[in-house]
Amino acid sequence: MAAVVALSELIDARRVWRARAEPVPAATESTGWSSLDAALPTQGWPEASVTEILLPADGVGELRLVLPTLARLSHGTRPVMLIAPPYLPCAMGWRQRGVALATLHIVHAAEAEVLWAAEQCLRSGSCSAVLAWPREANDRALRRLQVAADTGHALAFVFRDRRHAVQASPAPLRLVVETTPVPGLRVLKCRGGQPPATVLAWPDTRQ
Image 1 (spheres, rainbow, N blue to C red):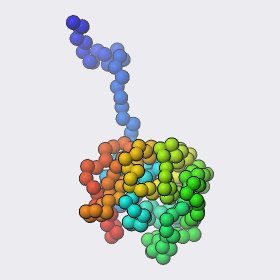
Image 2 (cartoon, helix red, strand yellow; image 1 turned 180 degrees about the vertical axis):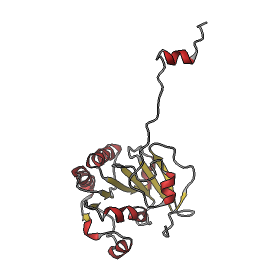
Image 3 (cartoon, rainbow, N blue to C red; image 1 turned 90 degrees about the vertical axis):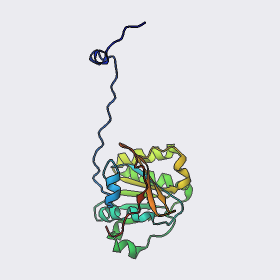
Image 4 (spheres, rainbow, N blue to C red; image 1 turned 60 degrees about the vertical axis):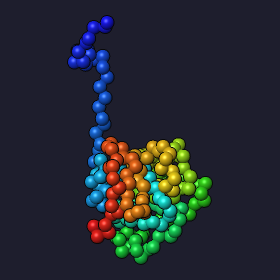
């Protein structure tokens, strides 16, 4: 029978590797929704990263999630890019929510070019945020977007069908919009912490 060795001795002899979690940096961009900020380990959108927002269908109110952020960013020096949105934004509604339309740009791209256009905008370093609506995107394509967002130090929001929730994704943050039985928001993945076990109530527009 092998001799029993105390764990402390192995540690002192550096024969045991001790893992240590990376510190989670605080986000500089609040989501604008206090309940969502409180649920995320970064207390806001992860910096220079891709956030996936998975939907049961287009137009279920998903843009409300990002409008507070877009309103702040649109008053900065770098533009906000919308790549192939399924519908034209309601200019009056966005203006009422504080979005400066002069710094908002829409790129009409064919499906095969949506990811390419988003990557170029992110990588350029000239955009504060890029929103894209690709119908299909594998993990490799999303990883390229993540690298581009990090390179260009921009926020990336990728809106996709909820059926992609079962696929692996390199996005640091993945959110699922729920519409039944009641509207809500489920955090599927958040780097640096465990997703909340419960569905978050849909953000209150009075915030």
